[in-house]
Image (cartoon, rainbow, N blue to C red; front, side, top):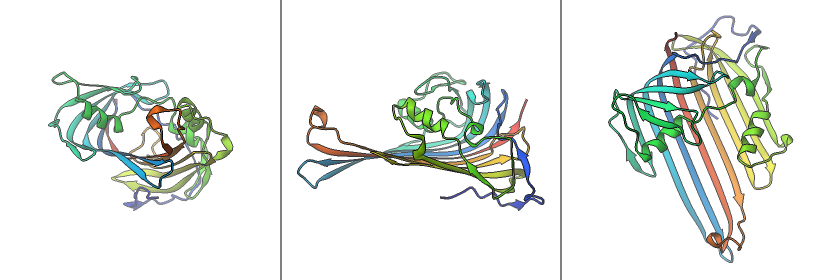
Length: 284
């Protein structure tokens, strides 16, 4: 899979082993210049009894946005719970339908404590985004998680570029459990690698990659990849992120379901991806 290119300039002494703190809580008042793109694609394939016929449906959502993000409130674990986003540009698409609202200069408030979909409203002129706009905003702004980066990859390790270690399975097991999917821990494999130390847009960064897969589980598989640029300065949070995930679920609904009578098998593939650059403007 692709990783983030951070090779503007190599850093001398980058191979030295040192203790790295991966716990990077946000603070109220943190401000970032952001460039974000996100996409979600769901493909559903149905196979029918006594037939070679297959029917495929696709649902595609994608969005690109730039602007300034301000952290208004922070959860106890350091994740953002309420934000303001001032738009420079916003364009999106749902199944080929273009969504291009005139939001330049508008300020969006997002309450990330509201589930399953965050609460969005405009600060400057009041009102709320339209339904399709909320769908696209939800690709980027998701309910605050009780899991942090450090919970998954650990922290306080003495490392040098090239080192790899095992990712924690617990956060993923708990997430799937909440979705009603119980997984044996031995079916999950994941590792984290400290790829390099490089300067990205003037910021001295660690480049970190994590890969995780769930396989050998009946009717279910999952693959996850994330590449992160994390400042060496431990008071700073992630400046760039590339995340990709693919979930596959196979169902055999049976004749007892009226809406699925005659369907032998349903295969659902969901692909989710996001790329985000978040350059700090100031903190207070």
